[in-house]
Length: 67
Image (cartoon, rainbow, N blue to C red; front, side, top):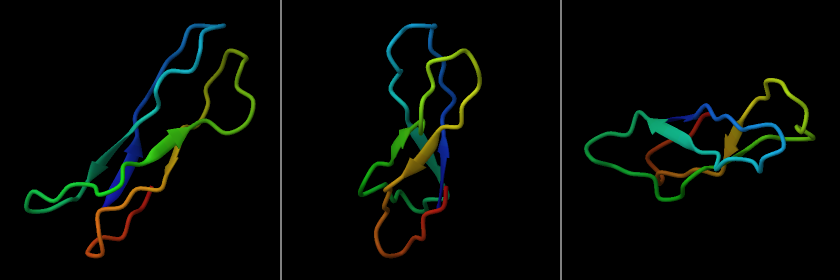
């Protein structure tokens, strides 16, 4: 199962948006048992592009989660 960070934008000087990730590869109506936590590491106040990383998701013992 793969969790992909969703793109996000913010206006200079504004607070961070809610970062989220989208799961793929779940089968037969399975859902996440624990949602991922996503965010930007380190300082990111200047204008630019930053990587959004996710971690902590779970879909139970039948799935290995990758990001």
